[in-house]
Image (cartoon, rainbow, N blue to C red; front, side, top):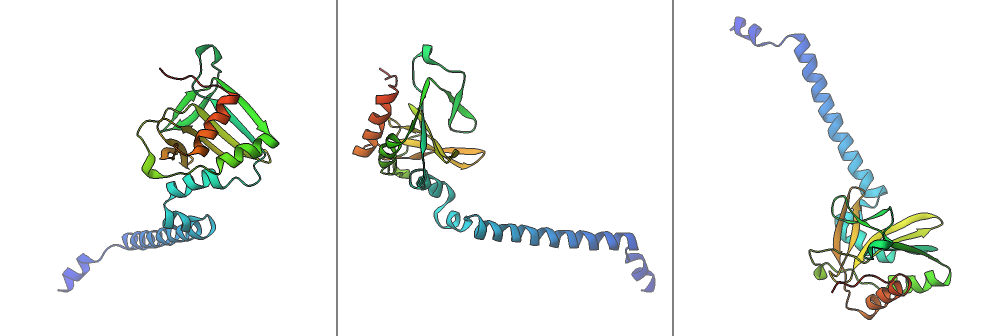
Amino acid sequence: MNERSETSKAPDGIKQGRGCLRKGVILGLWSFFLLGVCYLVVFDGWRDVLLGRAHRKALETFSEVDGVDRVEIFLLRGEGGQKQERTFPVGDVGRRDEIYGNVSIEGVEVEEFLSLWEAQRPDIRYQSLCHDPPYGFRLYREGKEVVETAICWGCVNFSVEVYPFLRIPYGLDATTEEAKALLEFCDARLPYRRDE
């Protein structure tokens, strides 16, 4: 029996390796746990857990606009001669549509725009699988971009940046008077191409 116990003993180097591996795994688990706690407490992760990140980001697209002082509207459905060199992210992984024109609004026009913008109603039930937006939008607060999205009234959805690497279409009630008024507001400044 004494011979057997001596042969089953691991060499000291292997014992040390197992000890380091065990400590590394424990340290990794604690680090992962602490990062999760930090995300939940410091970076509004608790809201993602309660609402779902996509839903929270969709709601914030139209509600977190206090202090917005400039809006850029991009025409994404125009005529070939209007095409610019730039593109606009509209959803799906890596999809970018061509820009056919853009206008920047400030001052009183921003207030009019925001009154229509904040009245939009995101709702996952309205979503279609297509996404062919006539307009893209960038909203700025003190020179910093706070919202970037594209709205499709025909497909009743808009793009939501869930993470910097992921945009998804999310439903929007495009039948409301406010949604129609927002489309008219944009069309008056940058008429979009109607598909026949």
